[in-house]
Image 1 (cartoon, rainbow, N blue to C red):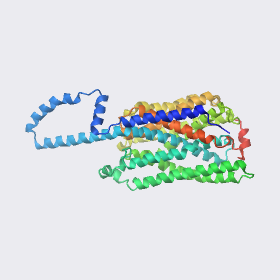
Image 2 (cartoon, rainbow, N blue to C red):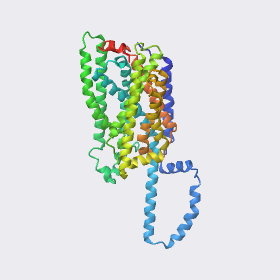
Image 3 (tube, rainbow, N blue to C red):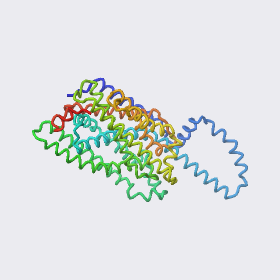
Image 4 (tube, helix red, strand yellow):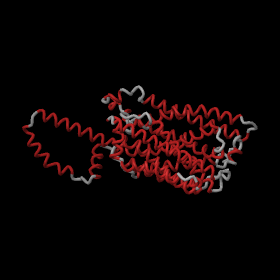
Length: 451
């Protein structure tokens, strides 16, 4: 049986405390009015004397306008209205920043557990012979699914109650003045949105619960009836998963910018969560093996995980390029604006993510021998995990905060808090059952596996 080391437990709790303080600082320093937002931007641009500079020209302009026409007055009034709208938009962007930092981190770590759940279900449905020695690691990681998913749903609900403006389609005033969003209210309305969210999380969590139950029962069984049950529910779950994961990606990520859509987006989010989940399986496995556990895991198992990390990184890049190339080539304004925003305002994280998620893995993991070396898997794995955090950051931040972004205390705090929570839940779950699923009929084949 695995025991949760005190050092790791303290480390996880420390991450949560530090991360919570960082998030708290982000919320406390966010603007609480339009005037505060304007002052923050002025300070950031070193324009603290902007009002003084504009005073003299304003007086001269007022004198000149004494003989202005009514048309010019109307134009000035319209300009003032536009300025007010811009200031309000700026305020929403800056006030969204800590919420977006919280949401990016919450969604990212939830996404990891959901990706691992899909990989686990595939192994069960395929009755794979190489992977049963890793089942307990996968079951440990998927323990984060329910608490992580509930946190995401709470953030979505708070958005619906207007604690933030992450989802502009949740604001009735915006919908009333936006015909495009108004045309989507049959799907994008809060009651239906929350019902879908609960259906998704309930379905995923029920599969995880029963699969874990059958897995543990199989250890003590004298036949393979529980294994067969796991096979059947895994095959059914994969059908449910591929539909609900796509809709979830539209709801929880793509609808932050309801004017834009991509038919590839569900697959794109799936590829990101899948490769990150497999990477985390490899990292947790190598950690446990370094502590003297998982003696039945050999370098061939690590090699296979490395192959998946390499292959799904290529698959993710294929989807990234397909989405980019098709939209850029068609040059339809309402579609291409998605990439223009990211290239102009998020240049470094947008292309840096491509280096971290494609170029680095392909250089490090191309060689077959390197996939057997723990150091290379860990090095590539850390870069892949951080790279896909940047991927989620690029999906959410531009639509939520526009160009008012930087990776500051709130963003780092959010990542650290959920990393600590993730580690605490996963390694606590690993202590609840033996690390070897000894009753699985393919366990002998898995222990003898050699590539």
